[in-house]
Structures are given as structure tokens and as C-alpha cells.
Image (cartoon, rainbow, N blue to C red):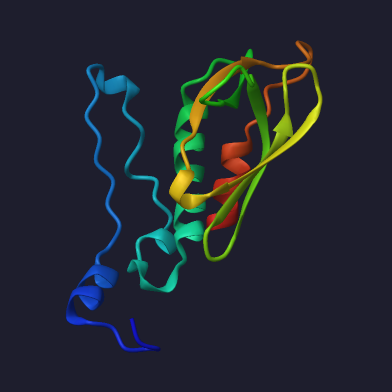
Length: 148
């Protein structure tokens, strides 16, 4: 709409506090909903779509990692084609509408996925860690710490 002036519908929409709700067949599979950082409990109006997507993805990644055993790390699979998986080693956003993922594929080749928020879909997968002698790397916890 106009510069700095919101309609009443836009004002109401922007004032809505973010919520998370999920139901699972096995309650042990449900992600934690008590772990949302205070920074994410504020109204949505001051964040871009990219920042909101980035912050919520961090929580999903961290929750996914909490369910992994010590032999696996989080990776993301790609839809549409036989493009494989990407071990997530970093993630970011570029306002107003870009989210990016950094990592390596199963062969160790570096990758960066740049995605518009309107096209965003992420399949989180458990991938065997590359070095059996090293502890599993948990990117979700590092990303979440950045939100605090």
C-alpha cells in the first residue's frame, strides 16, 4: 500500500503474533513449541518475508536435529529431479525475499542454494556424517543461538 500507511486489515495482520501448532501420530515426534526465542515472539510487522522464513527454518532444523542419533547430521533433499542432498553447513537471508543455504553434497562438493521465499520448500533429511570418528555437527543449535 502507501508509504508508511497501512489499511486496517494490514495493521491487524502485522500485529499478529507468530504461533506454532502441530499434531503428530507419535507425540515423541512433535517438535518442541516451548523453544521459540523471545525475538520471534514479537509482532511480524518489522520483518521481511525472508527473515521470517529464515528464523522459522532454524527452529525446524534444530528440532529435527534433536531427533537424530549421533551417527547422522541434517541435510536437505531437493524436489524435482535427481539432484541429491545438501549437508546444511550454513544458512542466511537477504531482505526482502531471498533465503540461502550453504553446504556440501554427498561427494563433498560445495553448494549454495539461493531461493525466493515464494518458492521455498525444504525437505530435511538425516545424512550419515562424513567422518565416523568425529562428533555429529549440529548447525541448528548454532543458528538458533544467533537468534537469542
